Structures are given as C-alpha cells and as structure tokens.
Image 1 (spheres, helix red, strand yellow):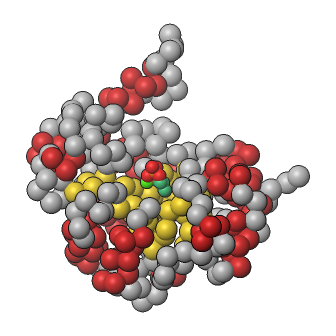
Image 2 (tube, helix red, strand yellow):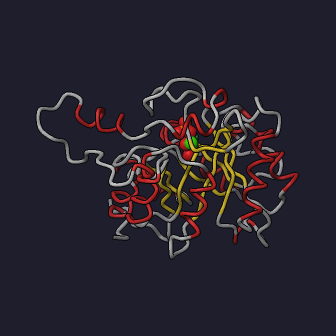
Image 3 (cartoon, helix red, strand yellow):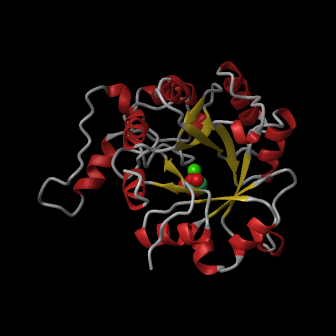
Amino acid sequence: MTHAPQRSIQVVAHRGASEDAPEHTLAAYKKAIEDGADALECDVRLTADGHLVCVHDRRVNRTSNGRGAVSALELADLAALDFGSWKTRDAWRGRDEEPDWVHRPEDPADTAVLTLERLLELVADAGRRVELAIETKHPTRWAGQVEERLLTLLKRFGLDAPASAAESPVRIMSFSARSLHRVRAAAPTLPTVYLVQFLTPRLRDGRLPAGVRIAGPSIRILRNHPGYVERLKAAGHQVHVWTVNEPEDVDLCVDLGIDAIITNRPRAVLRQLGRV
Ligand code: G3P
Ligand code: CA
C-alpha cells in the first residue's frame, strides 16, 4: 500500500531536531529549521525568578550537568549549566566507534539553557514561516503565572492576538484543561491544543474541553483505538499527534488524515512524506 498524503501534513520538530541534537537547545531548533520543519515544539517552565525557559523535566538533572528543580533555580543558575554534553554521552553509550552524531558546539550559546524569548527571536529571524507549538508544563503549581508570563512575552512579539486561529503561527498546548482555559480567557484567538495521554469516556467520544479545537493524542492512542481520529474529525477537531518517530507510525498518520506530526526526526519524516 502506498501512503501518499492527500494534503500537506505539518511536520513539527519535537523539542527541536532532538534525535540529532540535545533537546530544547538552540542547536536542536536551528537544526530543525535547517531540516525544513514546519513548526517547533517546546515545553516551558518558570524559573524561580520568573523567566520562561524551555526544559521538559521538572529537574535539570537528565539534560544538563547541574541538579535541581527549574522552579528552584534562577535564570543565572541555569545559564551556568551545559545542556549539551549529556547527548554526546548518550550517543557514545555502548559503542566503540564514534556515532554518526556527536555534540561539538561551536558556540556555547547553542547548548546553553534556552529561554522562550530567545526561541521566539530565532523563529522571527528564520527567514520563512516557522510555527511554534508551546506546551505549558506544571501550570497548576504556578496558579496562572506561566500563562500570564507566556502571553506577556507573546504580546511583545505581536503574537498574542492573531486575527484568527487559522492564521496564528503560535499555538498553546497542555495536558491541563485549566491552563488552556486561562490562555483562551486572555487570548481568545490563540489556538489551543489539548494533549491526550489516556482516553476517558468523554474523550473517547471525540469531545474536548470547551473552546479547544485541536486534539493532541499520543501515537499509542492512535494505534490502540481505531475510530478515535474519525470521531475527532466528525466533531470538527484537528488532530496533532506525538511523538511519531517510526516510519509505520508516519504511514498510520497519513492514512488517518492527521493534521500535524510531532517528531524527534523532522528530516526523516519530511523525506518519508516526499517533501525533501
Ligand atoms: O507534543 C506533545 C508532547 O511533547 C507531550 O509529551 O512529555 O514529550 O512533553 P512530552
Ligand atoms: Ca512537550
């Protein structure tokens, strides 16, 4: 069976081109833009002194040479850490010969902690339209501060009030319906994506939190629940799927008419889709 997409599927670089470069670093996002990704995904957290930084885990232990919770560290503490060398160690693990990709930063800024502000600058300077899918992490802990800071920052870049959701180059994603509700209340035209890891009966019927028009199910849900995407589409929702790295999963997304594929391997997915 051939899996030719009938229309363009957006390819979103998950944490940047994070298979090739250390996730959530400038190196990973520059590579994703070079690779031709349509959009970049990033997770945001608040530092102790109120800066939004792109870090997935609650702690920095896995992806840097430091330790501690992002929420307990100030931006200056994070700026002293290296967010790149863990990836090289990972790439070498279990090998005698040099792996295909080894992290050798020419510029230490490429693997320093990345602020959302710096990522917005990178996107603004990309020279072509590159969309941004921003995920709020642990938004309940900060009682609205993550969304407030996020919208303030987007406003500075003129991105908080698009004429319509369809025209917006930025969308906000979350596993928290409350976080998305806060965003919609303050910025009604910004598109929001409800991330789905487990199906409740309500979700299984294709329903989403009020006002949300895009579902973000995991690829595992698509594999295990035939008919789910059809129900979402019948309800008029778009579907953005994460994290799609295997060729057979890309084929499944094409067959189901998915709107966006979120992947650690944007180049490989674009190649499979015949776009590069
Ligand atoms: O794009 C959604 C996906 O990133 C959610 O999972 O854990 O990778 O943030 P996680
Ligand atoms: Ca994420």
